[in-house]
Image (cartoon, rainbow, N blue to C red; front, side, top):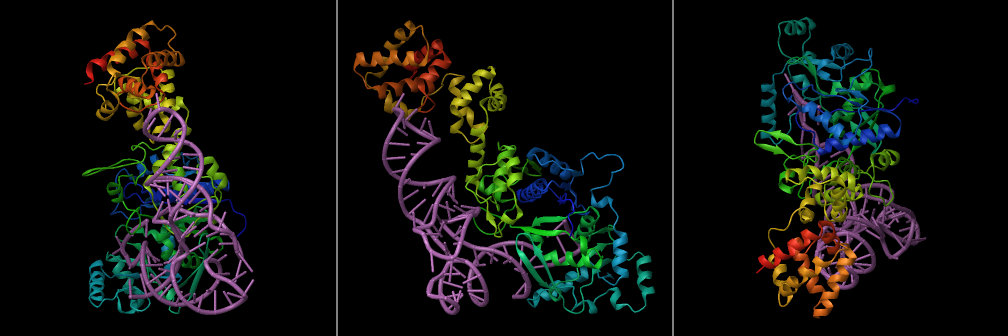
Length: 510
RNA sequence: GGUCCCUUCGUCUAGUGGUUAGGACGCAAGGUUUUCAUCCUUGAAACAGGAGUUCGAUUCUCCUAGGGACUGCCA
């Protein structure tokens, strides 16, 4: 293969929300394309008319946008005039390829009904065997290979009898192999392969196998990067390239390891999210009986999702774990993709978000936090909110957790943590707090260190424990035993508010 | 069942024919912090098993076991 421009595609089918595993496949395609200065194509594999789901395509587009994967060609992308072509397979024609394969003897018509095949499967099942439409069985079935006179074949077709076209595996065994970019050389024997349906007359559409191969050819795809679940059908695809005489431009394959459930067995599925309390979809998706949670709506940053997904099955070989999209593009290499499946770890996912959150500027976080503040009836200027956010951001994983860490910067506590009350609000403390009020009222220089000095002076005069008093003071201002530096809090909420809260505490805490 | 793929701490992983097998998440302990969190230090924690090749295998080969994917007129 000469040096063709790298062109890869992400080719989901619009059968529902995009699964996080699919998102990672898209990401690896994207990173690979951009790393090599190539094109990232989004193609919709809607060749199953019975499984089409309304809104799925928009969902896919929106997910790509949210995550920052820029699609060079595909549905939802405006193309220059003259370059208009469809990236939806249902809008494309495959007839010529079907005919070509039939003519060259690489495919044949089959008239077996789904019911009759189902029966054969059941019968095989009862013998603990598996029915396979292949070299060994096709001679006993209702297909054009067994019809001497081709006129009868066309007669049945012309009569409107439903049929499918199947790929004809060779009579004599052949060894098929290819060099997978992540797995190395993979071997298959055609003797073990079945005659897959490549076209169905019922909806006049090809199946995935034919559509995928011919479109990859027509779109000049150079690398097929997809999930490991496609490995078993890869030899069929290789044979299709051969049968269509396209072997010289056949793309290189890379089969990615699967993302596995956090606990238990098997690959990550839609249900695992509810059980484990983490999203398996990029965006929320409305179900008949509720909502499937998305990363976006759960409070994840897109860059955190990209980061954590990139490290599921790939790593740069250094100890760096936090990356921007640009860094990933720079560092990505398909050779460093792992072979084995990776279990998804919800804890680490949260950690990634926390890391990205801490690295964001206070101003940016403040902007995001303002929405919640407004809902809670607090209109404060960005400067103040930024300052607050800066003080507490290291304590949270999500923007949605900010409020519980800093509500006291915006409103007085309405209740006091019982445990802290019991531990700190005792002995001479309430009396001391009462005496502290007039002292603080006298203080003009309302700044953290001045406040601290003043209070320290009082404590010394009364011969009380510094820790005890400060904790009680915190209780009065915050309502609990948490939060950033106390004096900073006092300074920020202001003299009046501080004194207010002190008085309220003395009055309300029992 | 058949075909194919995979196998380093609980999880994500680095790594090499000779290493104290490294990092991260999580967990535990201690320290700092007036408290919580952060932060720092420390700890527990892995080469699936068996043969073979070799002076020496976690690393190479084979076998076994385990896990996974596929096995549709789905993708």
